[in-house]
Image (cartoon, rainbow, N blue to C red; front, top):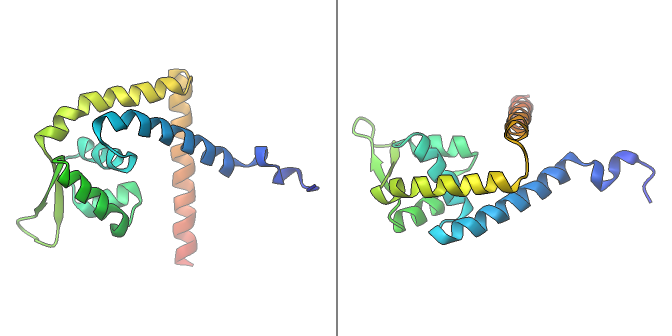
Length: 152
């Protein structure tokens, strides 16, 4: 038995985040199944619904994914008729992702999925957005520290 109170599982921020993430991802997975979407595909579509025609490098940056992880997700979205890859006219090295009509028509349905997930959290609207802000701040702080550690 550990003599350190801070080593108890219920005192671990990392485990609370891990557990919450697993549960929310599982909920998304079950709701997205109806639309033949995986959770990672959903995330890519979120980025594109926010800014259609974005460069793949920007999608990688926004989702914090490497090309080896993102490429198969994009390939599956292409095969499903959701996105198209287009090379930029001025610089052919830049590849942009464009939503198809099928993906655009899916957006309102997926907005309802997100509403269902938010409802399942049983948080008030204020609590939901406060938690979201705290988590975004935490992620930003940790990302910044990681960048500082890599630069050292």
